[in-house]
Every structure is written in structure tokens, then in C-alpha cells.
Image 1 (cartoon, rainbow, N blue to C red):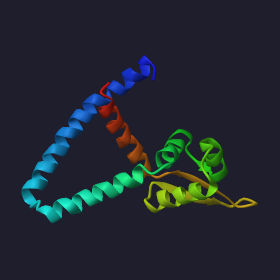
Image 2: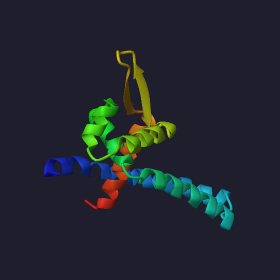
Image 3: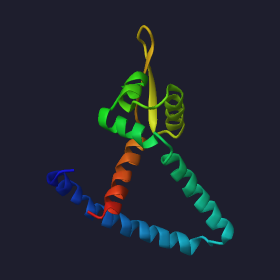
Amino acid sequence: MDISEEDDFRKLNGIIEDARKKVRVILKKHYQSTPHDRNRKKKELDFFYSLLQFATRKWVFDLLWEFEINSKLGFNELSRNLGEISSRLLSDRLKELKKNKLINREVLETAPPSVNYELTEKGKGFIELSMLIIWHLSGL
């Protein structure tokens, strides 16, 4: 990343600071209103871990980043762009992303029929919020 890009990303620091303050208020209210016994903590942690496990599966971020950069892409374009992913694994990951409502699948009325994939609003939000986390953790 060059210095001009870094300056652009530094603007995120204020957004992160504001968001953290607001989230802290929400969490404090949540902790006061909801008893956190062992079962509740386990339920919340299981939920967080299941989301993290999905997000960190091989090729998930690669695919989301391809859609972020290129907008709509077909299966073959994705396969070429990613290079080393097998067709089976690509198909599986696309199904998972669609199931989690991070991408849309559009069947085009062409001969032969073709399919395009693109980020949903939820998928765009995932990328945007991930950028905030990555920037925050980078310490720049």
C-alpha cells in the first residue's frame, strides 16, 4: 500500500473509534439485561465461532475479494482469477456464500445458459466491516 492510500485509510480511525464507543454502550446494556451464566456464554461463543469458522474457510475471502474488485463474475472467470481452486471446491464455496446471503446467483438467458455471481448488500457489508477490523488490527 502506498502512502496516499494509507492516508485514505487513516480516515477510518475516526469511524472505528465512534463505532467502538457505540458498540460498547450496546454491549454494556446487553450484559446488564441478560444474565451470562455458563450456558449463555457457551451459546454466544458457539455462535461467534461458527461465523468465524465460515469466514476463515479456504477461498471464502478470496472469492469475496474477487467480487469486491470485479463486481459480477461467472464461474469460469472466478476459476481463472483464483487459479488453484478446484471446480468442485469453487462450486461448494459459491453455494455456501449464496446460502449465507453474501452473494447473488443470476442465471442469464444465453445460449448456452450462463451464470453470474455478485455481492449482495450483506456481502458488501461483510467486506466493508472486515476492512475496518483489518485496519484496526494493523495498527497503522
